[in-house]
Image 1 (cartoon, rainbow, N blue to C red):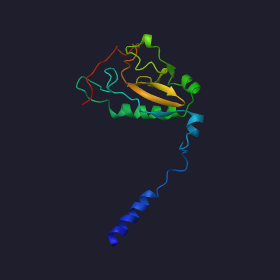
Image 2 (cartoon, rainbow, N blue to C red; image 1 turned 45 degrees about the horizontal axis):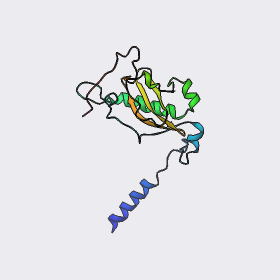
Image 3 (tube, rainbow, N blue to C red; image 1 turned 180 degrees about the horizontal axis):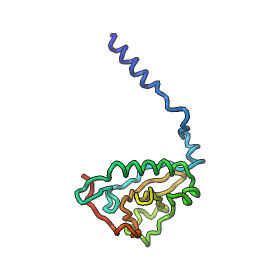
Image 4 (cartoon, rainbow, N blue to C red; image 1 turned 90 degrees about the horizontal axis):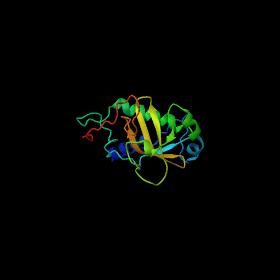
Length: 159
């Protein structure tokens, strides 16, 4: 009986941990609506040949440094509204599908993109009611023939 009591005390200690009080968390959605974006990956597709997150012909996945840059970008973007984001280094703008190497994934809604960093690629998706639905991640600048990136890079899907 003593073993179970000790387990319950250990579990209670874990449950009692509280998040830092200095960071306002948008549990009710109000902070997100007023101050910026939240993100959804419910529409995320990494099976498209242009956006499969492979980094080479061996099918290796993008490295950890790239994913850290992506996370830093998402944090930065989440604190901005649409107007701020359009004027920021992330350059949010709608996609003109007539100038891309891919077809629009759907005729529903307007697709947008923003820059992760100067040479780290883009995030592509739908913007609906302050939620950015990420559809594709484009580390190789494959969506458009951007100057200085050497054209489309096709790699096998990561293993």
